[in-house]
Image (tube, rainbow, N blue to C red; front, top):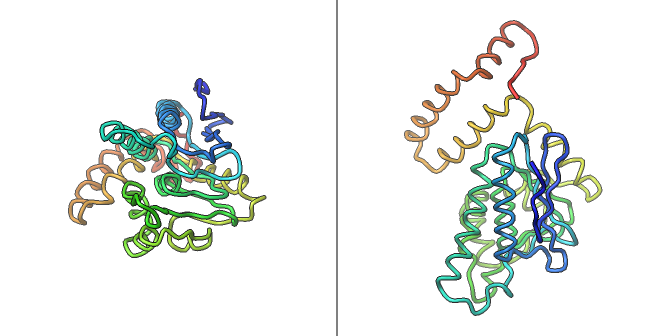
Length: 259
């Protein structure tokens, strides 16, 4: 895939992994409508490519400060709906593309920036990172960020974040399930690279089916979830990579999966 022609985003591919870098450091990678549209386009392009994994990162002192209030001030209801719908499409697309998406978080991830972390499949944070949904301290509650955050950390912890607006540190974010692990700042890049490598090994086709099925079943009640997952897993058993995986195991050899 090409890097696109973006004003707010940098896209770089190294081997099978694409890094999507938020590139508005002077505005703390705030998510203006233009920025979100570019991120959405970049994720869609990756989803349609033969890349096997994605890293989402931010350039500058912070990961993302969330929505750009300068872009939102004074807009009418229809415009605000359109902006928030674009944000929802971005978060949904991160989870609907077949490739694993790993957030590489440093500095602060606040409001919609925290929503990005919660929407990523996996996340690694540096030990200097902080996470907040600060609307609870102001006049505009962070309702849409809490869709993703609430699903990542559970109700009581989500509501503590939302109602207090307080910032939690990286260790707390890991304990609460918002990120997978916390590392020293100088280990953030290699640790993220290692996690992406491990999350993308094996059959890309099987992994894509599995990721999409996970998000489809996770909010169903248990009987419906098992019914859905059973059908998906049964159908997936018929793809070439699944048959190859079984054969390789039985024949005690390394599998050869399709590209």
